[in-house]
Length: 351
Image (cartoon, rainbow, N blue to C red; front, side, top):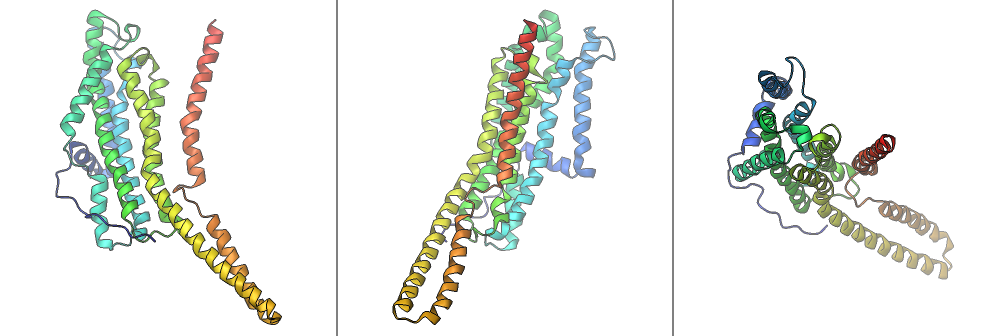
């Protein structure tokens, strides 16, 4: 196994960012606080439609489908991050035996995985607010109207827009930090065993589910909230970035351990081939000496080492189960195919 220079296991003490503090507060509520996200969603839906009721744009009790669809980005992102933090904890626990480090250090690593520092909070929130305002300004008039109607819709939609678009850069910062930690712990671990697949696959659950969060947001925007996207440069750019991030989240953090596993596999194969070579030489020596009875022991040893070589050849070097990779690819491309086919059929029947 190659020697690895381990970095310091802990950073300087830092104050967790606003997103990490919010997630910790929610998790401390009864039932891990899932009801908080439901209440927040209801409040945003109520606000958006109540403004339209108050201005006479909608009859009281009716619901604006476009504004209601735009409400779910922020609460969904918050809930998804709370879930992903739980996956990060379980993934770390499954991988920990491969680190070779004392158990007392695991709590420190868990803290780093779920608590991001707030150094970039101000920048992330400012970016989110600017994108929220820009996306509403660029929204098609067919969906958002003009004049006083558009102003009323702006007031109605502003909390949901700001919450949703601020969650995007905050989530990116949080997830990028988590996935960098995945790369770091893979790089520094000292007890990785290519034959033990449980730790090797541990963080694939985190990376694939993080990637799926961004993919789901993108496809929700294309389908349920499609009316808001038409010609909206700000929204479409965020949508494209979401799909790209989903792909990167799944593959990039696991690339380093893939290289380590390739190296480990090559080393194991060299070792077993060397033993096979020596056993072959011993077999030839005994045959040439006419010591045929003694060849049985060597023959059995050759069979055992050959079986071991075959097992090493089959060792995976990609740190995810094949079915998980196929599932992610299906989730990535199947909705695109369904969406394109539905649009094609819709255009055909409209003509």
